[in-house]
Image (cartoon, rainbow, N blue to C red; front, side, top):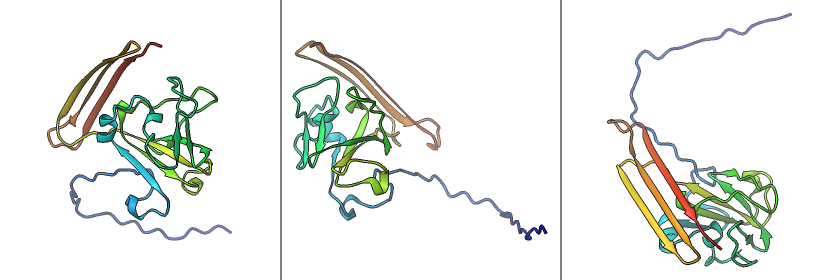
Length: 189
């Protein structure tokens, strides 16, 4: 015998404009301040990345407790991290980066807003991950106000770098925003 339960459908009589709602995902996947998390979290923001002129992700945590970076020496082809003595898992905006073997996908620090390191097991939130911890690189997001920058660098070992970053509202009301970040980098050996 087949039976169908009655279904009530209601429609809103009047549409209410609630304004702009901004949704931002966090590395913890919950809206909890870092101070209230049950595990150690260390964050390097954009200002510190620029102050220290970080050129590679493994340079980010050189001065943080519990993180060993560059332990095989300087290497332009890969990032070397150990967190609490274990190899790390690297994430970009909360999603695991593809790491097929020796060569890994390398997030470019110029396009990052901040980098977080989570010390200790994170598999309950992120699935399979090493027990030492994980690193989450957070991309730059569009801004409310119009802004732009051009960066030119040169240095030893034939280092040349040209970057641009522009952001702002795409519409007059500011409901839609954009951000374009580009980088050309050349480093000789």
